[in-house]
Length: 147
Image (tube, rainbow, N blue to C red; front, side):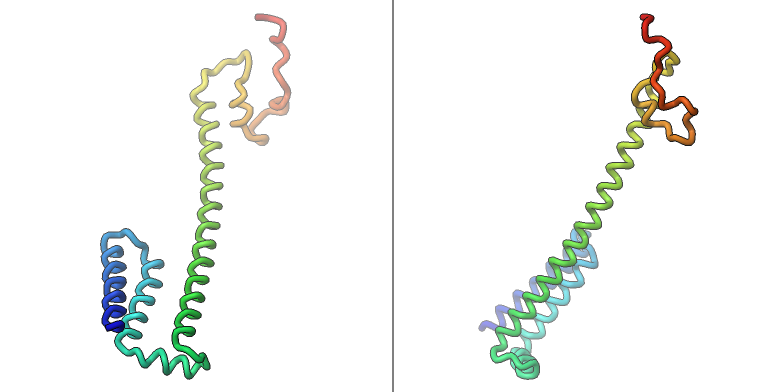
């Protein structure tokens, strides 16, 4: 009875993963791991003596201990992979936020009315040192007293 339940559960996992792949709800690189787990569970449910044989070969006393050890190693691998993915996404997000900030300043500089009396603060941010003149960093003090 237990083997039938395990087999049906594994079959449901494989079916769910395939359906999520078909509907584009799960990416292929993540689905591969779940398909491996589902197929391994199907094999172990179909041939329960196989786990005993592998446990004896590896030198583990109880087959359930081998199953738990393999599960823990798989979960550690998943955690490590997801941590790596999060690090990559954080770096990409930081880069995109910086690019958006630069583009926002440039758009504001283009949309600001061109006035020769006083430069806006966004104008000084949008210019780069090689395109700005030699006195670009100096404040405009010529019109200080006149209103």
